[in-house]
Image (tube, rainbow, N blue to C red; front, top):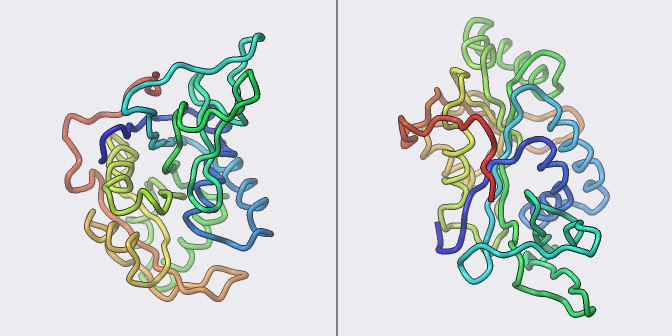
Length: 249
């Protein structure tokens, strides 16, 4: 990763506090139709309540170091989002961080941490929409036994996004290794566009294989690939166990 970039694990409360910033990164990375963003926001909020939820934030620190929090007289962090007590910048659609207003009304551009990427996942189980749809399709195409091998005890990686200006610098790789480190599940599964994308190449490089290709989720005609990899992922440090508590800074 580039200098000044750090990874932090967020618990559910911290993730929800920064959901607006995460949604902005999603919008900049994926460029979806504007009318789809409110629904994506609701989906991410719902995902945070699933079992064994885990989120990783990639944060660019100002001046390559840690910044002091900007607070109002009442002690609340300024800006629309907070990260473990510190104000964090949102990404505008063009991929640039928006500044927070300083007490004198000036925009404090570049003086607070900027969220440049995030990833999260959770334990897959029955009753979750993606899990149920994909497991049924896998059972039909691959057999019930194979579907159970992959989806019976799985970490479902729901979102992995990096701002366009920060892509290709190892951020996605670092987040994936941190997200999956020390997980108790026997496999990680995800879906991505069925094309030769940067994300697809990253997943293949991490040991993910194609379980289903040309897969169309209900309500869309876009082709997806369903991918899976045994845990731990190749390249993960054997000693990189999941901490008991989220990282603090």
